[in-house]
Length: 369
Image 1 (cartoon, rainbow, N blue to C red):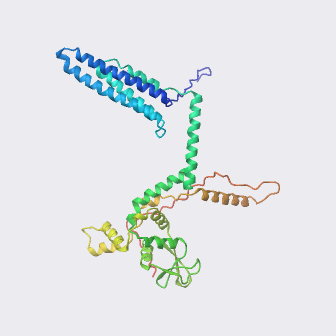
Image 2: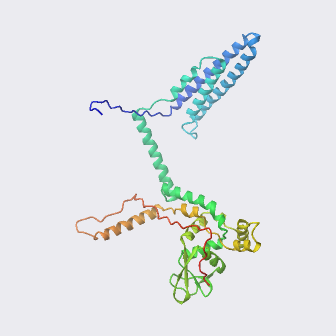
């Protein structure tokens, strides 16, 4: 490219919403043009000969209909401009609608569509200063809304979206598990690290590491959850097995907490729901009952899509811990230097996704008993 070649600069033109006063003026002008066109059509019909009377009468009615609509939109433009509850774009929308009806009224009357020129007044170009001012105002409003949302939810936008996605997943998959609230309680005890199996019984330990005594937990539900791989067993001394949540069990528990309405009222209702899902006319009745007694695994799509939201407090705590770890790795305190502090708005990386393969015939874990 030659050095003296002209450089073409593209100028970006920004358009903005016209003022309410401009919208009202344009809407009233459009309504006046529409009424004038309707009156002209009526005059032409009255002065016409019998051969063209039918056509002119149809044109008169069409123009009159459009004129009535144009006046309605002009009235609405005035009402919406004075109503603080209406969005700021409402007067502009009304004015554009009035112009559209005015154009159709003139077209029906066979007149020149001069109302179309009014559209240019509703598409005023913003100056650079006006555009910058509106952008500043828009960003300020967005920042205020974000601050309000963070105060209410304790999460930033990304994690709020993640929580909404999780609720959607829960609504679609919790009912398919065929659980009751009792299954959730078993998983909650396992999540606390105090569920253990000993002498053919499941118990909640008084505290972690003390695998003796404690409250009894449903034996059948524990066996079913373990067989379906929602629980994992870790062998301890004396034949004790500590039951912990598997990755699939963690996701299933979180989804069940998000959508408790998907849980069944009792074990019988849960069994009937599972039986309805596995019922096949070509299968033996006993095989169907056996399949209904087993808990189905969580759908692989829910496992892959679930992401646990991270609150702002958790982000700050993790950032402080990471900063402290880096400080220790770099040798700790040095005389004459300030102690490093984590950034306030540091965003942590998303949690590692754990994907479990979904097999057509899910293998059953070794029995606990």
